[in-house]
Structure formats: C-alpha cells, structure tokens
Image (cartoon, rainbow, N blue to C red):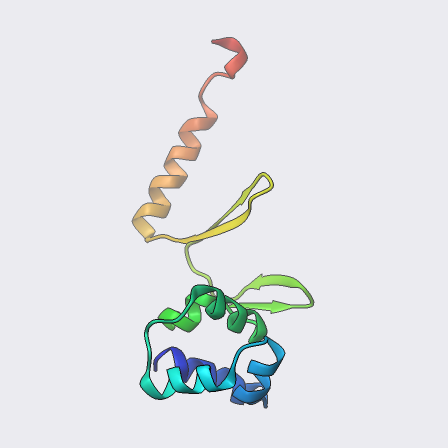
Amino acid sequence: MDYYDRIEFLLKKNNDTAKNMCRKINLSYNTFSGQKKRKSKNVDMQTVQRIANYLKTTAEYLINGNDNLLSKTNSQEHLVNKKNTIVVFGRGEGKSEYQVTDEQLKAMKTLLENMKNLPDEDNF
C-alpha cells in the first residue's frame, strides 16, 4: 500500500471522495489525480500535512504506512498504538514526536534516572 492507497483507504473508511477532500482543503483535484495516476513521489509536505489533517491522521502514516497512526478527535490528539513514541513539548514551539527503538528508550530512561541524582544548578 502506498501513499495514494492510504489516502483512498481513509477516504473510503470515512465515506468521502478525493474530489470532496480536494475541494475542502483547497487543492486542485486535477493536480492530485494526476499525481495519483503517475504515483508521483514528489509531493509537497504542506500538501501531505493538509491531507493528513483532513483525514484525521498523520503525514507519517500517509507517507510511511506506519500503523501507529495518530487520530485527531475533537481538536484533541490521542495516541493509538504508538509504541515507543517520545513526545517533546517545546516552549512556544509546539510539539515534536520521535519514534525510538526499545534500546534507545531504555538508554533515555537510564539517562533521566541519572539526571535525578545530579546536584541542583544553584549548588555548583
């Protein structure tokens, strides 16, 4: 299943059409259908994100087919089957998500545990 197949799958799941999606997100249907026919891999990331938002999924899912899909409901995000996902909230920068291996997750936990034992900055 490729990027376009996943879009079609989610559209069918939602009883929607590509033409309607394109109209709603202000994307030329002719452009989209042409890319789909050519199986174009040269797709603008902003367009991928707009499609993902419309389909209530992630750009990562559309591109990579990762079943660890993030569904958005009522403007809130809920992680579904997101094994080993690290979510980092930045100050005024939004959030970032990182997929990590079991080994990387274990190393991060060890690092955080070791950081608890460090003296406060004021005591240096």
